[in-house]
Image 1: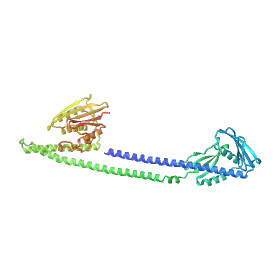
Image 2: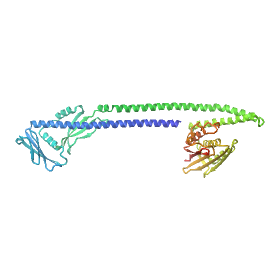
Image 3: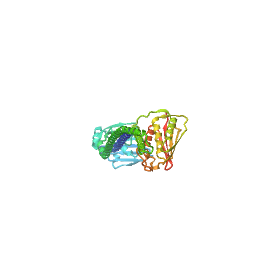
Image 4: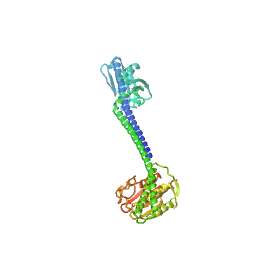
Length: 472
């Protein structure tokens, strides 16, 4: 029982840690995913803020500038160069030599630059060309940029830094995504790709909106975890109470056995004294004395068997030794052949090459004796018992006891190993017994690390085998 309680405790604690770990992992992934989605939205906001800034600067340049600026670029998806013109009036485009301009453009002085942009497509080409022209016609003011972006992004904006790299950046990318333990992110937005310039913007990812969005998930997870811990605490409390009750029951049984042994021994002594007196064989008192003696022997056997089962349940260490199993089985066979109530025929089939066996001699012989006792008890007037002993292929010893008794029905073959269980199918329910024999067999076999097998057919008999490992 103690081992089972420890196993249940261990499983309960491991299950609780596993569930708490899964809950924590799930919450962590949920928060991480939400922060990632928030990071994507912040990246879109940063890109939109820079586009708005560039548009406003471009409008201011067109209003104040008196210089037309012409930029020609080669793109991979255009066979001919694409030319963009920025004038005080508007931005005009020349494709294939055809100029698309508003009236008055011919009076504007032009500056020309040419770039090879064939490493990319032309999706953002005109915007990039216009951005380049804008920053050629104006002076970039970092303080003005920070004020503008801060106004657009609010408290989420921490700061920005212009970066000039070796490669042109055409699409916004997240350099440092936010994490559960770092609520900041770094976004790099194309600023002036033609001149390899980009803007790195550090932004704040607030946790409060994320936690508000996950409020019910977090509350539900906490409630499940708390209920689990309370259930485990209650389970442990009940198991401790059950252990205490089992200890009280065990102490009571030990005390009862001890107290009953004295009056039983006294009763047997008195019966022996009366039986020693010379009486007529047909004397009724002699028959009564014989019955009292037999029932006293039965009561003594019950107390001994109950003591054995209680001790086995308490996991008293086995005394493992090497003993002569062949001689021990021969002695048991000889004892049961002397049964006076029935005609008992016992045969022994010993097929092992060695007479030695490893195990607790006393307990294993008690097991075989219990099996043979059941064979005698639950058979007819003529009892045929066959005891066999042989080696298996796995370094084990198998001992089998077969009989020609009443048999056990299939639906009861698992239940007969339970303590105090007696089948209702027995023809004589007055047959002495308290249902502890097979439960004791089960306990001792398991203590040896072995296994048991049963083959039975109602009305034809039963064969029970025990297998005991012999590993050194």
